[in-house]
Image 1 (cartoon, rainbow, N blue to C red):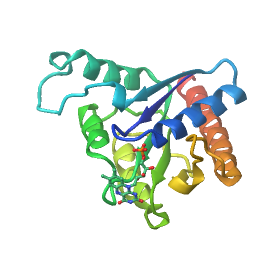
Image 2 (cartoon, rainbow, N blue to C red):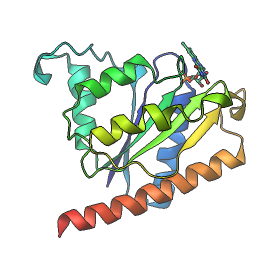
Image 3 (cartoon, helix red, strand yellow):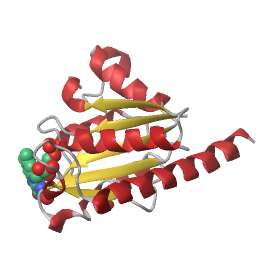
Image 4 (cartoon, rainbow, N blue to C red):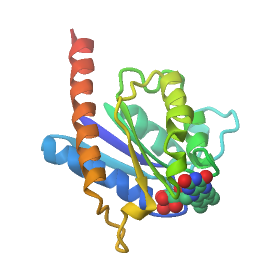
Length: 182
Ligand SMILES: Cc1cc2nc3c(=O)[nH]c(=O)nc-3n(C[C@H](O)[C@H](O)[C@H](O)COP(=O)(O)O)c2cc1C
């Protein structure tokens, strides 16, 4: 199975680190897992302007096709102004409406205040559901305080939450994939 992680930030590095942790945990649980991290900082995804996908630049095509090729996904997002970053919303706007059909799509959120831990529940989950993705019950909110100066996640509660999220994602995706194959 191929798990693609998206880091929806082009400013900092905490979200990318959190997504990386999830992908690493998935590989520990299933050594045959193929993982790929798409850090939006590394790509120049164009603004959606109504053109067919093939008329956008190579980075845009690469990011969209990587999402479409995934068996399941992990979306990492920071909270910006009590919402998701514009670059991440723009990426969702590029996707066809059944882009996430039969794909478990987990969420990891980073933020500077605990007060915004439900933002992705109310703002990101509906977008994923609209694209027909299956969002696990578990999600992970990583506060800036949970990172060390070396950008490592040090809070064991967060590490345990990542572990449980990955277990749930693999369990759900196996169930969906087996059902689809029958
Ligand atoms: C433009 C901007 C707006 C932000 N707004 C919020 C916010 O509304 N709530 C919050 O909890 N954190 C907010 N933050 C803090 C980031 O969510 C937090 O630092 C996150 O870890 C950044 O992830 P990154 O390093 O991947 O960019 C904001 C940061 C920036 C740069």
